[in-house]
Structures are given as structure tokens and as C-alpha cells.
Length: 167
Image (tube, rainbow, N blue to C red; front, side, top):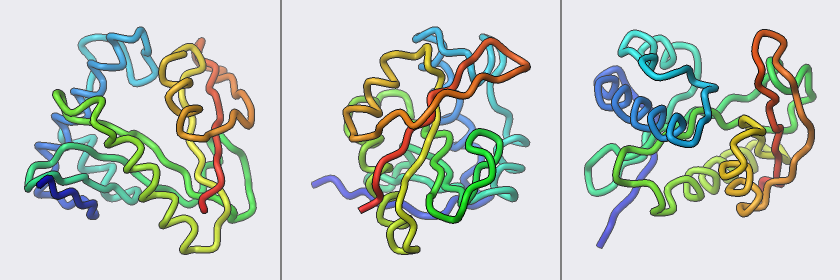
């Protein structure tokens, strides 16, 4: 029987979280999605550790092994602009190599939706590169609707802004 749990990440998790983020980065590159950087870039342990101090980072454990990570924020002015406190914002969903396609992404989204709803917020929101049509279709298959598009002035990426009801 497979046992899964989600918990807040700690500094002790940083080496494995770094590997998971880099596995997800390689997967993005395979789909010509460069929003996390080009080949040779990637994430350092320092970057991951700094992320733990700035936001709520979580890990997904399956049978004692860390297999995924993500963060859940309570505002996101960078992509969504100033908003009333009506949503939770999911970022950086990353799955360890070999665990793609096993439903971890949808389980993460469902867990986040429960946390968001428990705070009486209505929406789970996220964004992705609109050029990554496979990822956009995946989010749409989970019930997200495209709420808008946001061009990034510094790059050539246009972000798809997605949301779905939390309950």
C-alpha cells in the first residue's frame, strides 16, 4: 500500500528538494519551456534554502521518500496584481524524476484547495508559460480556467493565469 503525505519543508530537506526542482527543470526543458532558465541553469541548494525563508514550501512524501515539492502563497502581485484575499497561489510544482504521471500534481492541487478553502478563500490560482500547451491542457483537465494572460516585459514569455474554485 502506498502512503503519501504533505508537510512543510525544512532545511534538512534542501539537498533532495534541489534535486527534485532540477528534475522538474529538466522536464520543462524537454517541453521547450524555458521559464525556469535554459540548459545549464537550474537550482542551487542556496536558492532552495532561501526559498524556504521567503515562502511556504512543502514536500510530498511517498513511502518515506520525498517525491515532490511546491509552494503555496497567499498573495501574488507579480502575476496577479493587487487582489483582495480571495485566493491561494500555487508555485513551483515539481516532481522527482520517475514519478511523473502518477497523479502527484492533482493531489498537490487538491491539498492546496483544501488549505485555501479552510481559510475561506474561494480560488486556487497558478500560472504557467502559455507556450507550454501540454502543461496548459493539464491544468485545464484539472478544472482550471484561464483567467487571463500576462506578458513579461523582460522576456518573451506570456503567462497563462489559471484559477479554479477551491471547494
